[in-house]
Image (cartoon, each protein chain N blue to C red):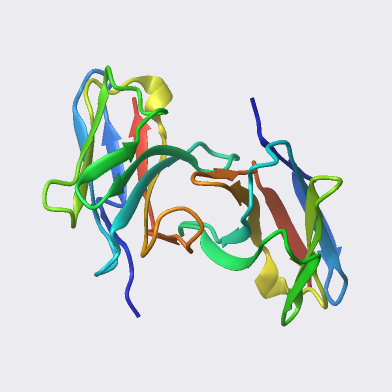
Length: 114
Length: 109
């Protein structure tokens, strides 16, 4: 069964350092999402890609976060510099279509900033 | 502004009982209402979804009830089993999906 792959699964970093997460969506899925999930809360959308184009990054803190999907396949989310408040689970999801289509989530990257 | 309000935050149900989780939304433009199930250490997975042209959708032991006029929808899990113990998220979408804060469900064996 096809799955969304994410790495690393866990990351511990010191504040002010740079950190990057990688996501490989299900093959053929044109839409890719990055979410942040704080413990005890639901996922919050950070950025949405349609192929290689950003269609929504309204909730992405652009002073420190960046995301790219250069070839419209896999994607990287970067934080520089990391802050203590960035500690969370970062989830990647993909779907065949935008909007009202089932999103398939990866296992996430648990980030701890010390 | 929280657009999807979910309750309760946590729920304990006896095995074989009915688990009920409720959600309310504000944006009348929402037209797709999925429920996701998340186990510890895993990403959420779609459980069941409904569109506002129907008032109820059933898949196995899981049923969504939808009340468009009240802007509320709920998940019912019949004959709840210990394997159903997980966190459940309701969500609502127009072009962007908004998740509720989640309900941690524990089924007592």
